[in-house]
Image (cartoon, rainbow, N blue to C red; front, top):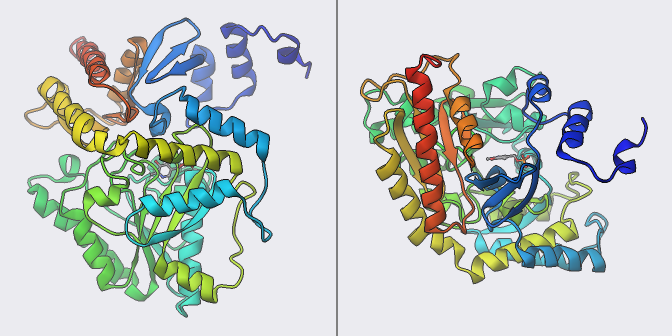
Length: 466
Ligand SMILES: *Cc1c(COP(=O)(O)O)cnc(C)c1O
């Protein structure tokens, strides 16, 4: 291949798009369709805004992919990376060595996590953190003399990443269809999606019924065979599905009854998104082990972690010998330095209480007041700075669009054209803006979302969607 890009550093949006179509395979994308349309080239970002190569400004209602919690262009995070690159750009933590950034970050994470999640294992992505949890809890049970406790129980429509383990544990039908066979000894139960699946049940009765599904599953496979239950406090990629209030306490009661470990996948909920440092605190349960990623570094560099409670860690440390697991970039010093600075800023600027007491309540109230009665909008649910909007054909009879009607994608494309990034998860529109968003910027998101719901509704009226 001739070295065209390097020979022509003055790349334009068109040359970037052409090279993208020729060489870049995108994640979760129909490359054929993308290559025909051409990708939108994002050039720069500041605060809660992005600019594309046409100079159009977009307000980022998704904080990138649920991760840029402190917003774009924070000089402190840039300086943290720059300084660490100059001092020690890389060293591993495998062979009896450590370094200050990884150590201080482990300490900082232990300080902000609830309960006795005092021991931290590092990786680079949420998916790797999930793999780590699976390997670690099975290893834990083997050390406890119960190697038969291998089964992990997840949920339908859960998202736990895209490695073979993450895809297997998650409940995304589209992912299960490709690249299998999936990992064995994984089972799934129903999701606690009351608006979509609760029928005529009260929210409370539905919460109990969905937790009961866990007990039924544990009894079906045999309590002695179950290693852990894994769940997101709020399902993110599933469409921001907030469980009934009694769901997680009941799940916890059942797990304790059968000595099943609780793993909370906090990759989205962690670091203030729900108005607490971790989602489990918003939903009233104490996990034995936790995965975190996205918000850990506000997305500036890839880093993830597993926080391990004393029970598992003590066995691993005292009886485990070598744990034969880890990644070249476990505890990467530059990523760790950025994550440490990110946590320092979250604390110094009281971002978590800003979400809990100021901007979260404002965001939730404005969404309901200004979009709640829109004819396309069946139901709005959310917590902190997370929200999901169910798009329906008919509000009163709660009639959903047909499975072949991609109403979410149509709405998302209207948003994109009108300067708003709002993502579609099937027929649900989701929002997860940076935690530092101001009330005026929330208003801007909602103004634009309203306009785009109107445009989508016009498509429905014109018979373009059915
Ligand atoms: C994004 C996500 C993951 C996977 O993280 P990656 O960094 O993309 O591997 C896992 N769990 C949840 C809940 C997520 O939202």
